[in-house]
Length: 188
Image (cartoon, rainbow, N blue to C red; front, top):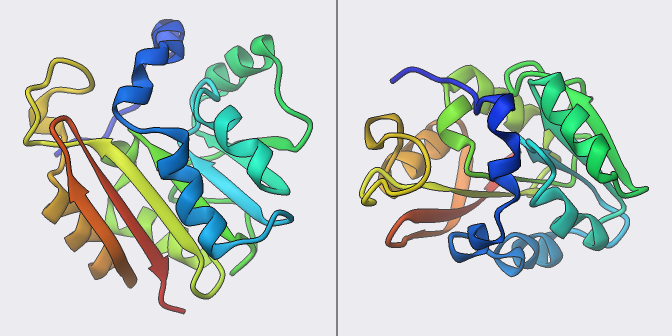
């Protein structure tokens, strides 16, 4: 499976509010609220235009919007970035955070873009002990009406396997019609 990124020239498509049908703010924030406090430092991995970053930001102290494409950050800046959001241009496999610096992380519709063993090891490295990682992505079992082609996706058991192999403990995993949701935590 090849890993790729969403084209920057199609960034406005990521601002479509129908995306909430596939993952809601509550599904992202709920596991964070259970595992971190309001002063927490959290990362949105593959933040893109900040669509979901904006939803999570009010519930954490500092939110790092991490994206490998500077053009996505440019788009986000044009919308307006919340005061507690820090834009970070980096690949998930090379995050500029100290060991255990983050209290949690979310990733929405991007896991299929970076789920290689080295990137998952890097995510685990930057998360503190027992820190939650919330993964929502397109499932390979979906119809493929939205999101990447089916052959570029994982199904929920594949995502769980990748996370467990990387040293995460999976607390919740659910396959849905077009997406899956996995809540894991670092076992460090």
